[in-house]
Amino acid sequence: MTFQQLTYFVTAARFGSINQAAEHLYTHQSNISNAVRQLEEEFSIQLFDRNSKGVQLTTAGREFLTYAQDLVRKKENLEQLYQVRVKNHPQHFSVAAMRSFFAYAPLLAILDKHLWNEPMNLRLQKCSRMDVIDLVSRSEADLGILFSMQGAVSRLMQAARIRDVELTPLGESCLHAVMRSGHPLLRSGDLGGLSRYPYVIIENDEDYSRLYDDASGSISDLFSTPPSTIISTNDSMACQSIVANSDAFFISTTPWKHGPHYDFASIPLSGEENRITFYSVIHCGQSLSPLGQEFLESLRQLMQEL
Image (cartoon, rainbow, N blue to C red; front, side):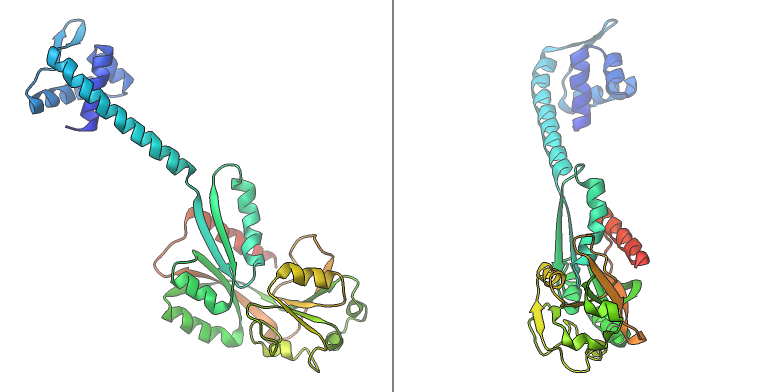
């Protein structure tokens, strides 16, 4: 006995006709007849009396119909229940990135497309380079985004192999000094005086002995002397507010692309040592969901615009 056989039988009983049941179910008459015959053989009963006008339930057929309808109805209710759950079940997608900009910027296009069409659970995490690799390795993040200067690439690739993750280049950029548009250094065009101004570090772990959240000799070389004032924070909005309302500055991995919220200017730092390569991080042997693939494609387009 199958649910298809029961459905064919219940429909034939409802219409009192094999032909009408076949038309209603978009199938052939022979399929209905064969299903009814198989049920009769399996249970050793006669379900219908057949005549020129159609079919009529026997006494045994009416009793069998009661149970068959109940089973078919329960099956339909179960299907409807889980169809609704699947339809309303949110897609889950998590990104671990060394900079939140690279996590939220591609989501804007996704939200414009999907916001009112389907539910989603999205998680964005800002963390260190090795944390990005570890989160993807442990399947706690679907996608990682990190960057590296050329001198650290070989160590990065070795760490990726050990943790069974795959790194794919996304594009390149260079470090930039970001400051408000009216900053005095913009008038002189000379970054040699950076040490005189407050320096805001957007860090992951509090460490005042470093000039960047990732050790960088090229950033250290910016300063003829250590900055007179260092402000360390892991809150990017606090960093931006400080720079927008003072002569402080911060170092960005890209030109300023964070929207029109602040009137900032960014100055590229010269030298090959300030070139940065960005990578996507995916667990080896795993593929991204359609939502993840859409995110990654938007990220690639973003990198091409830098």
